[in-house]
Length: 476
Ligand code: GLN
Image 1 (cartoon, rainbow, N blue to C red):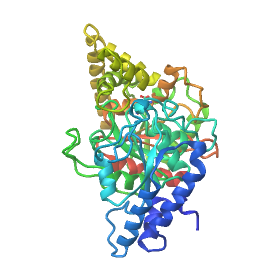
Image 2 (spheres, rainbow, N blue to C red):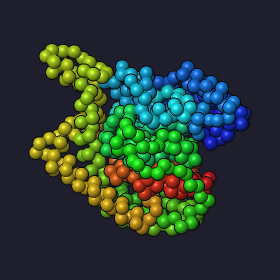
Image 3 (cartoon, rainbow, N blue to C red):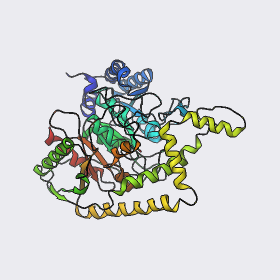
Image 4 (cartoon, rainbow, N blue to C red):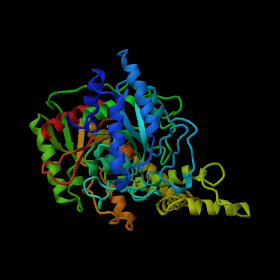
């Protein structure tokens, strides 16, 4: 049998239910892998070996009555360091929260615990989820598992590497502009950003509250569906969660009747790696062979997605990060007069990227500029949403590359913020419109992973995952 930590959740679940393996063995296999690799890769910034093994033992006792608490019962997973787990540090990759201990469970985390999932630890991330390489973490960069000189993408780079390097069976991240899909693409895992309102944001450290959404990293599409199911649902603690019928997977054998839209103008942008285009074209061809009807579509305002995002997001960041002032949470650098305490705590606590965005957002919201920037961006957001709405009158899913490139070198874009922001060209408009989208590996040439993005209709994760599942089989 293959090493236990390399199992998919679907296979592990079956073996656990049959009593052929124990959750302790499974958990130990992941912990061993972490022990062996984390020094080099820095995917986890906190590992909870004792708690994980205890949780695994509770499952193994419970299993004997053959009633698992849920589909993740006994399954070891990682969570991003911006999801609160009561009693454990939660730093959002920031120095300013180095000593912050979560005082309650995020709703998504509570659902995992209640469902019996085994939480292995918290995974590394760009500070407050700002970045596309995990180099903006105060706790050192995460490295790509296939080439430690390269980045894993970000901001949820730790979660992507935890799954790609078999240091967990699944993991969770958050996606505000692409932070699940882009690292999934660069590391060769499946990553799902659910529809805005599907998963509660209660207990998720806010970056841009109107765009943030929690979602899974998985080894395949079936596992992504299982991980997503476990955390979805309306929540009284988050008034933006939607009163929609729960996601239930509907697997199909082919793509007959599926209309796939390809926004050609987006694909033909300069700056996209040739190999990325080729591999994504191949994926489109496979969808055609599976019965899909592929057509070119127009997606007006898609180009404006990045500009809108980089106005709205910093505005929300500047408001959300105002609470970290050295008084209630984390780092405090005392000085007199009191004002100096705020200044020093924030100056020493925040990294360069966080500061850049706080400044940008504060500027865009300030009197005299708010109409020109924030209000204008909100208007264009409506246009982007309408453009998608119109596109979805004609097609069921929209396909694009996930990122314009494969994993780049550490340091390559670190001093080029604009270059780093361009990593998000295919992903951000999805958040701006609140849509669900996933990234799946599509390379068939044995090279570095290439991500293929499918965007679905609002709350149609079932259709999205089902299409991805068929394509996944065809790409094998
Ligand atoms: N890379 C994007 C940014 O830096 C997305 C981040 C995210 O989704 N959290 O803002």
